[in-house]
Length: 322
Image (cartoon, rainbow, N blue to C red; front, side):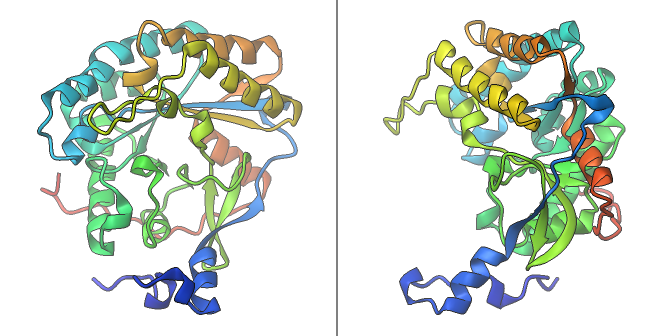
């Protein structure tokens, strides 16, 4: 299959300081933030919105890296085995919906989890096949894996996903084209704003809503460690809560969106799960908040802006790919 991205839009593998202006401008403008989609009004007149999400990577991070460390595989299993029950129980106690982005392989390894998430009314979104990095793939491979992942999540959850979060938020030259081809409503992988915005595709409105993420609002950057790479950061739970609450406070003051990304194998531990509880309590204490899935946020913002999605019709993948 021929790539839908013109070769001129993909930066060459040469020294960037040798690029002519057309090349570096083309790289910047290929996928860009367009108009803000922050709505004048949130649902039911809420003063601000909260979108909580979880990247249920589980065993796929180590599988993506070769699958040779059984210690790392067990850490991934912890997220499914111990972290997820705590997370789902807390969300149920608070009556709060969330979005779960799950690699297809993680879903197939943990079919009971995806069934429980769907049964509880939470959203399930695309999050790669096996946590692969899109920027190292060619167009045809990335497209095939995205379509297969969508099909698997549809089969296991009973609902076709309407949103994508790329693994490690790695967005290639082809990713937006593939999102449009699948016909998704939104993406949640990019970081150009605090508020939702419309993605520009080569300078043109795409009809795709971006629900922006940020490493500041991600638990993994504070809790992850790699003993072999001498990378051993550790943020105490109180510090992480303080950062999250400061982000929440200003989002509320600005009447905007507070979006949060967490991982079951990180936030699901006994010493950390209370952070989720405190964030939800703090948002509720403001008295005028809309807790919503990423899909609900994207749909509301698109409707308020009078947007019509421009994604192409999606044809289900051929049987046997999963």
